[in-house]
Image 1 (cartoon, helix red, strand yellow):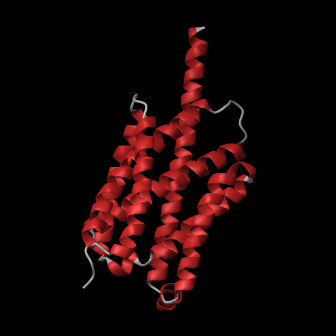
Image 2 (cartoon, rainbow, N blue to C red; image 1 turned 120 degrees about the vertical axis):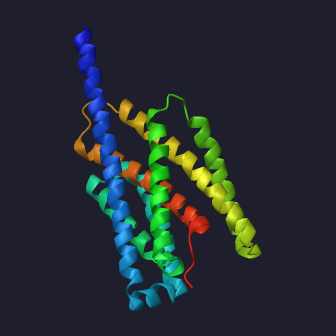
Length: 235
């Protein structure tokens, strides 16, 4: 009996590890595609003029990104795994296209150093979310309310134009996404632990894609807020 329980525990841990590994692999692929797309667009004067010289195209791309995020999040259960994967890949590339502007605003060294700091912060926070025994549900709810506050404050600052308020929003934003990273990681761990036995590969892939999208968004937003704090503007 003890051997059976031990075997089941080992089997469960293997399944959890495989799922989490798949989530992080797809997140890394998404970040890689975003970086490649950003560098490619930043190095093309024609694309820069087309995208950032035309507000209609730029805001159209932003709306397209939001539509993709909502589509993947809300309809992934009805999608094929291949469709969910393709949409995630397309979103990652599209996000890189719109983020190309940061390579024009900030020095390459400050972008690289901020990315390293963000990756280290994200990694430590995610590991904490994975190993902690504390239930982070309350933390996640609090951080979600903070995220709503950030959105409202950012909209207000569009009209106020306060650099001080913008910096405060950035510091709070880093704090919020650190908390959300820990919470989302724990949520993914629980998802892996409670998934029924015998799930087909397509269902597991869709779960991994949704998890990758969640952590990808946490990472990108944390990076952008950190960049606003630590980034050095080009002369």
